[in-house]
Length: 371
Image (cartoon, rainbow, N blue to C red; front, side, top):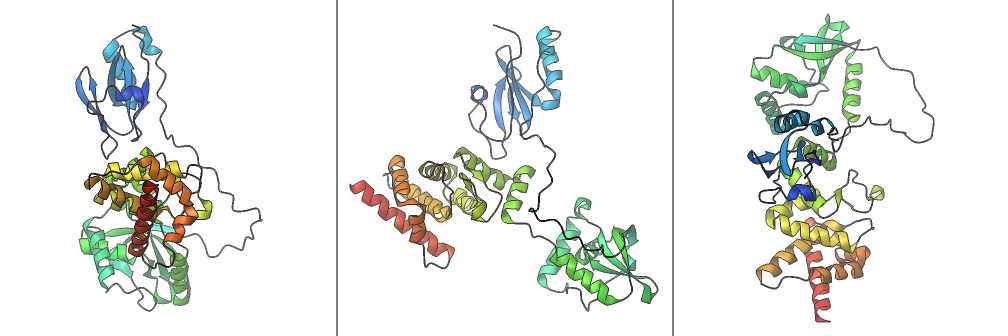
């Protein structure tokens, strides 16, 4: 047997490579993407982004940056150690190309205003003009201010936009960021806040900037939030991503169906509900049926179909009469995506769509069974 190090796998949270699975203790990948392997040192938990490597017929695991050091501990001065290639990270971050915004040339208008002056300002010097600012007396604002105060995080504290009023002897008024200001003041241990200071000659200009600052923001979509949560390691989002990946599908990044590609789905909320109500195995089975039945097709309107399948799979299994997955896939394909959409036409709410779809799938499958 060669003593040369052979294979390396970087845990990306998905299904481990086949050779890695032979070393796994229980064959289970946890919700956070980790799993446990047998090694000469005993069971070792392999976290996401850590490396598993094989040397002399045994598996070892550690952080990627420690692989060479670990090998030297194992093999000493064995010449094969020096020949181990540096492990390639999966999902390496590459420079993002600039987005081309169509083919039309830009119509650049003159720049408005002058560059702001970044400063740290005493909270006690900051004021708010209630004539154009949002009221913070409502329950939602009060809750947000309390949350900011209780869980203060400087990484989330963007600089406030403030106005230095020439007509009020340089008084400083907050244009954008009053919730952050009130949260810091409520804590009592943050005397200064970062701010970018603009010089204005009248409150109309302030109010105009307030409007522009708020209207120009692009709200974070559910899909944006989901993908960020996966990268951050949020357990519920990782669980959804795992079942989608296990079914051979991917979660898309755009809500508009016109931009979807075959194999992309976006009904992450429905999958979260299914994981809670039916469990991982049922969710994977339902998604896998959809993936196989509509392979190569853009999966529009599949949220209600998925929920209906989960319910049928669960109910039939409890009754001791599990469905035939192959037959169900034939039923799904024969009715077709357009046909399933017709099943919930005229319904107004999510529960109504799910109920209509459940009836349609149950009827179609029963007819297929009877043939």
